[in-house]
Length: 221
Image (cartoon, rainbow, N blue to C red; front, side, top):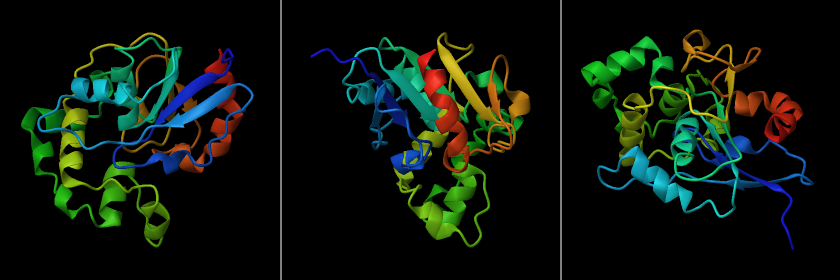
């Protein structure tokens, strides 16, 4: 039987699991959703090699790849090796020129190596770094979303983000960004971008109604 549905693969942000997409609903008549979870990187594994490993989890032809934050960077890398219908990047960047100054400074000075990832077992510290949010009194709420606090993974992820080498936007990419994102401020975002009013870095969670209303059309165009 021929499969007429579009297969959409969701990739969460750094340290997050697929539960960040729990409120995102796409019409089941047109879409079938699949969730990719982070795997622990191999020793000195490049982002390119990691993307090739993740591609093995994509089992449908011509899929849509959708990634949030670091997941947005990863799906772009994955799309370099397979044919995709579309790549959707949320709360992330499309090339290194969109990084804020502090990330460019961290790359130049290698200050990212000083990030105390061993302290990220403290959920409030992890949320502050991964989401750019203060969560006083809401730590338990965010525990379910940020479960990947392996020190090896975190050190690797931070290094891959800061040192990402992509100088221009890929084709066939839809870029969705919040105008109040503190991790990747919108003032550094270049080119065509769909802005979500009052959207922060965690808008995939707290602006889910916007996504449920707009994603089906954006994925179908």
